[in-house]
Amino acid sequence: MAEQTAPPESVGVIAGNPPAVEEKTDAAVVRDALGVGVAVGLSGFAFGVTSAGSGLTLLQTCVLSLLVFTGASQFALVGALAAGGNPYTAAAGAFFLGVRNAFYGLRLSQLLALPRAIRPFAAHWVIDETTAVTLPQPTRRAARIGFTVTGLTLYVLWNLTTLVGALGAEALGDTDTWGLDAASPAVFLALLAPMLKSTTERVTAGVAVLLALGLLPVLPAGVPVLLSALAAPVVLFLMGRGKTAQTDTATEEPEERR
Image (cartoon, rainbow, N blue to C red; front, side, top):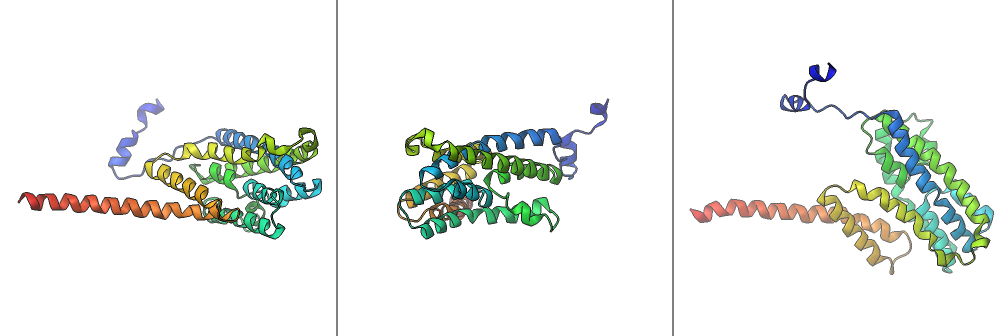
């Protein structure tokens, strides 16, 4: 009976009313958040192994995961140290790579609208994965649940698997041959790919990848990723010029026919 009395969605759109927000149960949000948290959290093992293989102690490795808690920056730091880089240069590269989380925070702060007392603690969980889960949620309640469950699950598992990886590094031998440092970026790409739905988003992502790969050999770690953000304004500018050219062509054709 409820389906017969409820007005169709098209009626609301025709009448000028916005369509109703798609509902999503708390259980569904928790399920999605746990899936991401568990999948990415397990890759902390790769960081633990890589960090121990680069010469960091068990304590240094665990403190990095506890206090830094951003996989890409952690991998950039230990990778630079393993290559014989200066510790200050390695730390600077990791810092620049982590700056992107500040931009995530600007968007999430508006979406979550958390109490002031909680914001400093929540800021520690503003990373790629929590942002990827939070932004698509249809309501603020769902966004808060997704952010909290993803952040908590990922933080606990990441630190536990970091410890296990650092302890088991000796058993694996030469860690470079395993390619474990690629685990975290691969997981993030798997999360990002389904979100690229429009042609503009796909082109922007492609240009960003080309920029990052092209600048990687000539710039310090972390900087190519930041500069790859220039792909967005470049693509939007070029697409805007293309639309302007099409409009000019369409207006000139009738004049020529006259």
